[in-house]
Image (cartoon, rainbow over all chains, first blue to last red; front, top):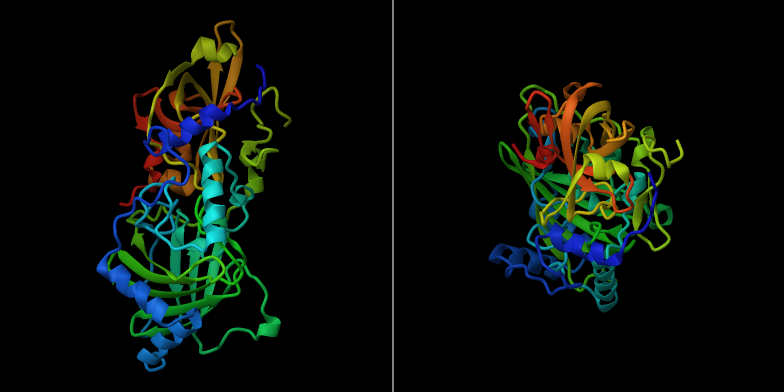
Length: 305
Length: 128
């Protein structure tokens, strides 16, 4: 067989339109997201009022009178295998279309950057650094699909995502962040937290620059988040998240992320280690035009084994 | 490409399908479907993606191996697809979105085994 590598741009435009069930999707359409709920408005305003992630975290801590240290007897039951409820392709669960602008107030340079990215995607030019098993990193960690485990101990909580073996450590033993002199960008950032009853409040800083998802806005190394984790019923974990990033965001981006506990009565769902190198057929590289393609399959005559 | 002409049915369709979560799916033509009938050569049950390799006999007697990509084992498990479902030699009719560049590979949409059992790997993200 021939090993042609052509990919007409016209096809690629059609692909995206089909992907979202739209005919002729235009680049960077205005947000079609419904108006924010009263709760979302209230939470967004809370984030604005507290000005910074540090300020919001301090507000919650003061409200909780410093928090309640966990003991082994008071550890909440967060066991099981969980997954995100909303579409993995949006940071904000309220967004409805991948080709529309997300419901967030971006600064002009970051809005321009996102519009340009959406325009490229609509021409079929798309590459995700995750293709080579680069970690999603925080905050993107929150929206990736696949399996998750949440492991609570009195001194630390481990938040695990199967994808790329990413595990966040949340220190709840009273320690603070490293000093500014010792801080450096980390995939998952540095997270400290405290317990307010059965709610875990987390402040994360020191994150690397990245993107909220493949076709979502970018964030800078200045991004900081505040999260409030709460198991609201037997199968639901809700997380209120405020993302602060002055270069990219005009105001904090509040979202409610929801994870659902999966039925696993036969214990068949287990988190395994991922290594992109274990199968040659999964090797995806960036093309000269900035898009994605497989390199060499092991099962075709034209490809190198 | 002889394999496509001899053994594959390609249709233009408009369907709503999810992209792969690990890499972009732009290398696949989401507007086309290819269906081939053959026998399983190997089920590469690997992370972050699995590949089901299917040997398809062409009209001239030669064999082309097609690769169908799906999500990894945990997502396939959630879709009720296990490695043992597709042992080498299993008869299968399988459909996917083909590669744009003509190589015999596709993103796996659905499959029917020789015994009539259907498999839909995209059920793997359903919450239940």
